[in-house]
Amino acid sequence: MAPKRLLTDASPTPVERQSVLRTLRSPRLLGIEILGGLVVALALIPEAIAFSVIAGVDPRVGLFSAFTMAVTIAFVGGRPAMISAATGAVALVIAPLVASHGVHYLVAAILLAGVFQILLAVLGVAKLMRFIPRQVMVGFVNALAILVFIAQLPELMNVPWLVYPLLGLALLIVFGLPRLTTKVPAPLAAIVVLTLITVLASLTVPTVGDKGELPSNLPELFVPQIPLDLETFKVIAPYALAVAFVGLLESLMTAKLVDDITDTRSNKTREAWGQGAANLVTGLFGGMGGCAMIGQTMINVKASGARTRISTFLAGTFLLVLVVVFGDVVALIPMAALVAVMIFVSWATFDWHSIRISTLRRMPKSETAVMLITVVATVSSNNLAIGVGAGVLSAMVLFARRVAHFVTVKRTLDATGETATYTVNGELFFASSNDLYTQFQYALDPANIVIDMHASRLWDVSTLAALEAITAKYEGGGTHVQIVGLNEASAAMHQRMAGHLG
Image 1 (tube, rainbow, N blue to C red):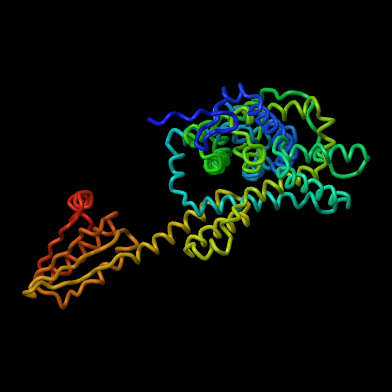
Image 2: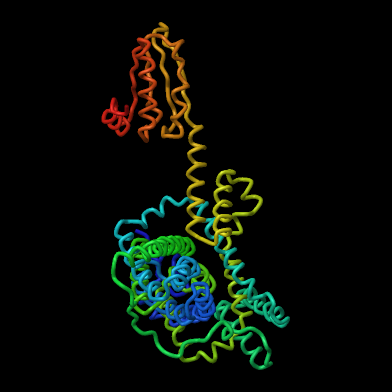
C-alpha cells in the first residue's frame, strides 16, 4: 500500500475540501479567509445600496439583507465560500410588488419565498441541475460576466475626469499585483490605495457615501402588518414563487461553478433549503431577500482564494461593522476602486476559452448555438431564469434534432425471398420515431416480416405507437409481423402498452 501523502498548508490536494478547523489552526489560511471576507464586504456595500434603489426600498433594507443572508448561509448553506446577499435578480422580481403594495407585503413575500424554497429542496429540485448542459453553464457564466461589466458603466458616465486615471491605477493594481505577490489581495490593495489618494489629495470624485445614507443602528425584528387572508396570499404568492425559483437557480448554478473552480463537491439539496432558511431569517429582520452572488463569490473564491464558511460569515459580519461602526470611513471609498474590482471579477469570470477560434472550430455548431442563445437571452432580459430556460430549451431541441438523424433502418431478404428483415439501429423516441413508419416497403415486402430491434431501444410511447402503426399496416394487407431483439426494459414497456394506444 502506498503511503499517505501528508498535507501541509502549502500543499493541499485539489480534491480536498479545506475544513474550518484546519483553517483556524493555520494563520496563513485564516488570513486568506479574513482578507477575502473584508474585500467582499467592501464590494457588497455599494451593490446592496444599488439593489435597494432597484427594488424601491431604503438602502438600509438592502444592507441588512446582505448581512443576514451572508451570516445565515455561512451556517446552513451547502457550498462553502459562496457568498449570498441581496441581489439584482431578486430586486427586479420584487420591485413591482413594492411599488404597488409597499414594504410590508415585500417582507411577507420574502418569508413565503423562503418557505417555497425549503419545500422545493424537500421535493429534490436541486437534482434537476444534472439536466443543465455544460454549454448552458458556460453561457450562464459568460452572461453573468457581461452583466457584471455592464453594471459598472453607469459609474463611469457623467463623472469628473479624475475618475478615469483613478480607475486606470486601480485596474493596474488588481491585474498587476498578483504577478508580484499573492500575500495581499489585489482588490483590497486597490481599495486602500485609491481611498488614501482621494482623501490625502482632497479629490472630489464619486464615493460610496454618495450612494445613500449608511445605517447607524443594528437590524431589528420586523413583523409585516398585513391581513393574513387568502387575498394577501394571492397578491404575494406569484412574487414569492418567482423569488424562490430565480434565487435557487442562481444559487445552484453559482454553487456548481464554484465546485468546478475548487475541484470539490457541494451538497446542492442543503444549499437549496439553506437559501430558504436564509430568506426566512432575512424576512424576519425586514430584508428584501436574496440569493448567491456570482460577482462577490468570484472575489472571494477566485481573487482572494478563500475556501471555507469563515470567509462567508466574516463578509456579513464585516459588512455590518463597516456600515454601522465605520460608516464615515467606508463612505470615503471612491467608486472607481470598486468599479475596478468588479471589472476584474468580470474578466476573471468570463470563460475566454469558449470563444477562442480553435475552440469554436472544434465545437459542434449546435453546442456553440446553445451557449450563444443562453448569453443573448440572459443579457437582453437581464433575467437569469429566462436565459437559462432558453438555453436548456434550445439544447433539448437541438439534441433531439441531432439524435433523430442517427436512427437507420436496413432491409434484407432471406435466401428464399419469403421473409424480409428490417434491422433498426439507434435510440427511438418522439423525435427519431416519427418518420420510422415511412422507412418500410409495405407494397414490395413478402408475407413474413421481422423487425429486429436488438440495436435500438424504445424510450417513449411515441415509438410504441409507430411500431403499432407499422404492424397494423402490414397485418391489414395479410402480412405477418414479428418484433424481435427488444431489450428487457423495452420489451416490458411494449408488453404493458401494446394494444392500448388507440
